[in-house]
Length: 321
Ligand SMILES: C[S@@+](CC[C@H](N)C(=O)[O-])C[C@H]1O[C@@H](n2cnc3c(N)ncnc32)[C@H](O)[C@@H]1O
Image 1 (cartoon, rainbow, N blue to C red):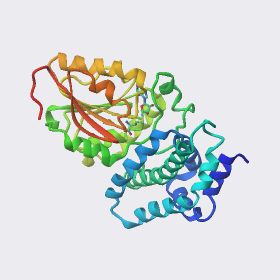
Image 2 (image 1 turned 180 degrees about the vertical axis):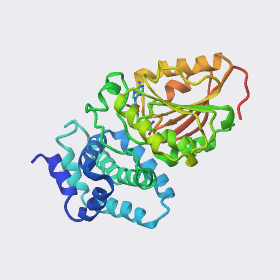
Image 3 (image 1 turned 120 degrees about the vertical axis):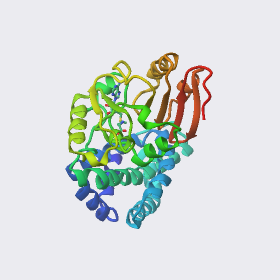
Image 4 (image 1 turned 45 degrees about the horizontal axis):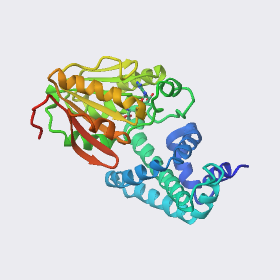
């Protein structure tokens, strides 16, 4: 058994068995794929910082102590295994990595392992279970439901952290009734469901993967009308950078959708909205390529934290709050 597989197998042993059982009960047979997917993703050093930054938000949203205890329990158990984690990472990474980098990767893995079940648990508890939706699932890189997006320079599906999107929208000084909303790469539609708590004039989710777009439509059909303040929500199958966006002032939401080479295209599109005399508010979760947007003369940075940034692209000369 490879070191990586041994490590993954060890997660199924005590003291993780009970936790894993809870996960399995909550997430069903996809769990192993999901874990593997996130373990792979955890190899990216940035992922660690991202998870670290997300964890307090997850804690803040934990209304029941149980979830917090699970997170802390997993973290402390994993801390005991730190040396083993570092060793297990050895064959996966660049052998020339410094000891410091390896330790960083191990921290990353530990936090990711604790954070993702928390997020999935919350999404399952608050959206999937009560309304019979499909939001978690498994769409590992290179697999079905991810190939088209990756071929187009995008990232595979993952559900958004709902509280982070809510927080971003709450910080924007806009009138939802006069504003449209577009989710660039809407996946299974969770971002749309969260944003639909506000009475936007119109909402559009654009998704390149047909299977995901179809699931988003089904989720939308199942999600109760009384939970939405916006009555005009559409899912469009297509490329987020070339498909039409709603006209007028618009919130442009993206969560880990585009890789860096595509960001200048997004910037041009946002600048065209400003040139046409409208405003585009950008909610950018995991703003890894923020500098590509910030560099625009039409852009103003309204808010920045490690896992979220808010920008406004507006007609020249307009004063922003
Ligand atoms: C990280 S997920 C975000 C999901 C969703 N926005 C949410 O908040 O839950 C990124 C999504 O973007 C899609 N995607 C990637 N590149 C795209 C593109 N060029 N056009 C449309 N969708 C794209 C992927 O298929 C994936 O579903």
